[in-house]
Amino acid sequence: MDFSESARVKELRERAWAFLDECVRPAEPEYWKEFSAETLPHRIPAVMEDLKAEARKRGLWNLFMPDPALGAGLTNAEYAPIAEISGWSPIAPEAMNCSAPDTGNMEVLARFGTPDQRETWLKPLLAGEIRSCIGMTEPDVASSDPTNIACRIERDGADYVINGRKWWTSGAAHPKAKVVLLMGLTDPDAERHSRHSIVLVPFDAPGVNIVRQLPVFGFDDPGSHCEVRFDNVRVPQTNRIGEEGSAFLIAQMRLGPGRLHHCMRMIGLAERALSLMCERAKSRTAFGKRLADQGVVREQIARSRVEIEQARLLCLKAAWMLDTVGNRDARFEISAIKVVAPNVACVVIDRAIQVHGGAGVSNDVPLTQMYAYARTTRFMDGPDEVHLATIGREELRREEGRV
Ligand SMILES: Cc1cc2nc3c(=O)[nH]c(=O)nc-3n(C[C@H](O)[C@H](O)[C@H](O)COP(=O)(O)OP(=O)(O)OC[C@H]3O[C@@H](n4cnc5c(N)ncnc54)[C@H](O)[C@@H]3O)c2cc1C
Image (cartoon, rainbow, N blue to C red; front, side, top):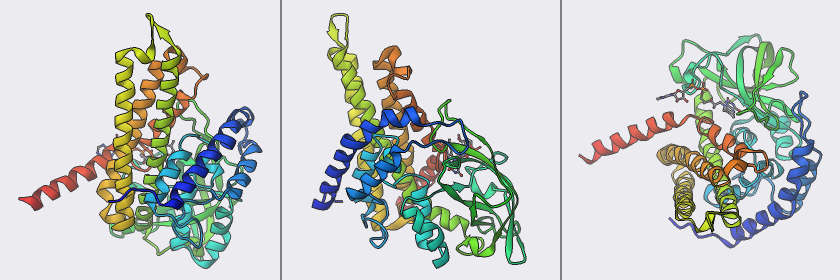
């Protein structure tokens, strides 16, 4: 493995830092002041469009997209350090058109979409004109096992009719959310992994109803995470992505890079927490010494540095595996980093909260919001336990091979 940066990646990384420092971070106060979750759709501050225009101008647009005809054409290992920088700010990924769940959806459309689907949905997504959602999780079934997914997609003439309830549909309250990639049951009698399909459902289709928004630890995320009802929603069968019964195959392909992108951003988030921790430790004195000079605080700082470095290396290895051997053979490493990165971020943010004292749990510093994001990433795209089960199974298999 060679993780040294090419001249292009180094240059992009420097550009990403400059964008973050000169544009994104200065815009954050205005963004949060103007953002409002009180209406549906949400009020997304105008500064976001300014940031998007600036990111495009600076060549920091669609960097996640591995297809050079559609985006930057970076490998996952090359994209990792740039995604990490975007993890320093909750608004940077959208500004760079690199935010979840759109990135995964764009990759699905690029790979499996028909020419019509690409024209209608991928093109405006790549241009940042619209946003999209992924609708897998359902309130009524344990969705970490996607074979449970019960939302019905039934043929009716040339159409599909959809009935079901989804929740945690991220971004559905965003004013630009125009379409959801919905996973549902097309053939209950087929083999377990061939029962489900993915169809494109426009949000303005009759019968799509946003029931409520779900805050996270009390925080309203821009675009929220919504419960959405689908009552007799009719879409043409041409809205299906890939073959009927291929939802698992597509989801698997989508989740490999998607999970890694979350982890890359988690490492940036942990770096930000460590930086806040150090700043605070240097500026506060207790019992006659700066906090930074107390051994116990130094240990917290040192542990955080070591754990972030470990996570970054594992993330790079997983990215390198994804680039070189593909999704299937990189599944162990992807599951491993999907467990490690959010947990490291949670621990580092928690330490930063502690070093801040009472301020740490106030809204004067962003640590509580950062913690909420890191904590939920332990569920998003599969809970820790499911990934640990994969790792355990692989390890036992490897062990058997050795005997
Ligand atoms: C902020 C946020 C955003 C999200 N965005 C989206 C989105 O955009 N689209 C979408 O479809 N979903 C989204 N999700 C949903 C997320 O992917 C699911 O919550 C997750 O997959 C788990 O499904 P579940 O909630 O049904 O938990 P369940 O399946 O009910 O699992 C509950 C718990 O059971 C345990 N468990 C499960 N399986 C095992 C096992 N094999 N061994 C041991 N223990 C196990 C784990 O502790 C797990 O956390 C989001 C979630 C959050 C919190």
